[in-house]
Each structure stands twice: as structure tokens, then as C-alpha cells.
Length: 88
Image (cartoon, rainbow, N blue to C red; front, side, top):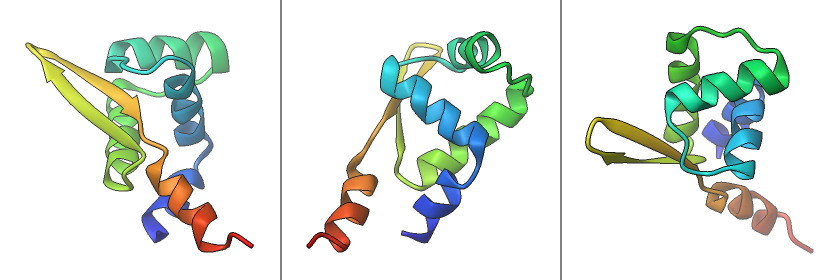
């Protein structure tokens, strides 16, 4: 669970999750374009890729490959595990 909290602590990673929640299955290029146009973030390709690695390690992002493209999808299962832990 610590990985999830660490992943959520960064505003750029939260913006990435927002974008994937709105439109799942985006490539790195698509994500960067949306982060620039919608959030004004000017992170490099490498920086966004590193953020995606953190999100993937926390289980919040899943990837799939089709040919030379890698698509990123939101996975909310780790968030449900957190809410279930403290459910009344």
C-alpha cells in the first residue's frame, strides 16, 4: 500500500491518472500531449515515462503492447483495497 500512497503524492502522477480515467488506453505521446494542453505541464518524455513506471509499480496503471505501441490503462483496484481497509 505504501507504493500507492507514494504514487499518489505527486501532482504530475495524479494528472496522469486523471487523463487515463477520462480516456484509457493512451500511448506515452498522447499522454504528454494531453498533459501539456490540459494541465500546462511541460515534463519531458523521459520524466513522464518515469512517472508511469512508478504508477505501474504501484499497480495503478496497466500496460499492453500492440506492435510498436504501448498503451496505458488505469487500474483502480489498489484504490479499492485502500478504501476497503478502512470501511466502516
